[in-house]
Image (cartoon, rainbow, N blue to C red; front, side, top):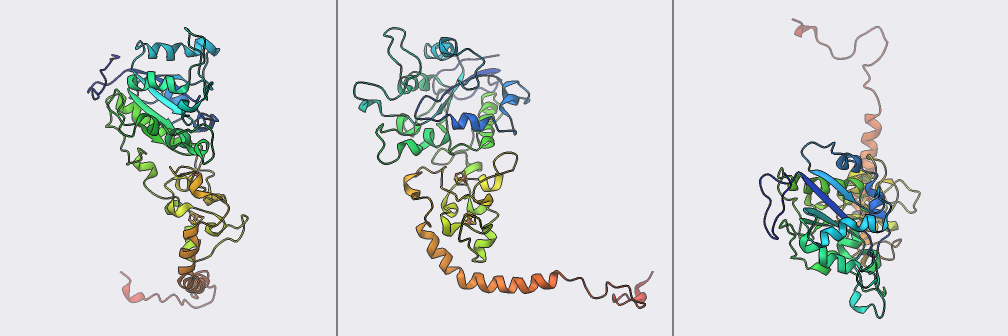
Length: 354
Ligand code: SF4
Ligand code: SF4
């Protein structure tokens, strides 16, 4: 049975049978996160929307890129209903950074439909103000919506920010959840779908709230660093560093920020375990981080800490590499008793025969 709830009330044990996902990407956005999510397979967005995952509520997805509507007012209908309090429960997903409309001069930085009364464009901010307090859960997808991202870099004219900067870091949804931040530029497909699935199981009353860290990221996805999951870390440990972008070795000297960045892409790959970043030759530019991009630019320079740690590891690394080389050479030879001669030389002792 579908139920409605008062703001701040926690999940009922029964949960919801049906829920809407109102997804707005009309901030400072490229829709890259929406596109990325279509690459997920565990679960795929089709599996979630078609009800193929046991135990989830029926999901009605309202995303402009994936919408079967003809757009315009037909697409906006669900958003307008929700703003009037006539569509519950719903999860509000925000993609793109939120501009500062207090400094928009005579215009507006964003628009998502027009105000039926005035005919004037409605800003993303107006929609967030109307919908966030009514949303059972609020989810920020991608680094722009979570922390501001590329659009919020130094010198930008819009004064844009992440959703928690806009709503407040202690914001609680109608389902008593904090904002759920899933950063990444774009978001890793399964990182988002896995988090959404957890939120949906929670909505169904079948799971506790997703565990988030102090930056509101899912802990199980962002608790470790890129470096901790990078399959080039063995080169680092042996002080064997790539000098250019064609090298299969560790890329710290050509700009990789992996050791200080929270992200699981090196462990998880991009689509079905294929792809990634430093694991496949692209320096980690820290696209999941709240300090992205300013604190990591210029991207193709060596990170400041990288030169110290790579220098300190040099004596140990080159000695260990040499020793491992010798052992590796020995391990690559078969034992001498594996031959086709007349005598057995394996050391077999018939005394132990039964
Ligand atoms: S390429 Fe980057 S993440 Fe991988 S081992 Fe080197 S520094 Fe660490
Ligand atoms: S490995 Fe680095 S660049 Fe790649 S997705 Fe993660 S944070 Fe972004």
